[in-house]
Length: 90
Image 1: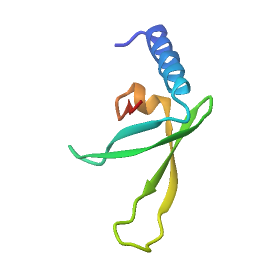
Image 2: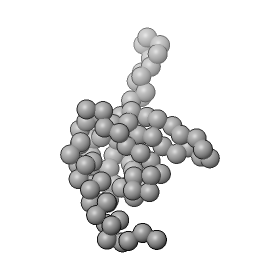
Image 3: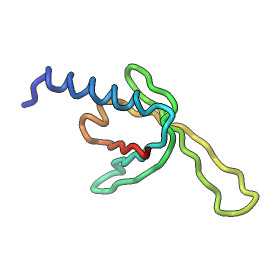
Image 4: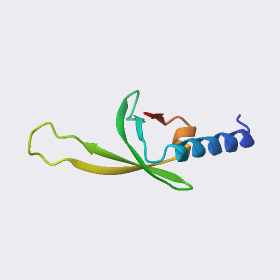
């Protein structure tokens, strides 16, 4: 059983690390079902008290094709529970 004070301290540290990397490139490793993972690279664009937002761009492989940009939000608890992992690319 985990100690609540330890979890709060870990959560605070996660928030501080993510806030320090706002505006920089990150790689997210996301759980994609049973024993499958998906890696995505994007820019950490906004940080809020309960979540953070990463912007992704699908680079088109065909000339003249439009690049698609989209955002996804993640909670700090996803990182704490290791459901999603974040790696800083700076």
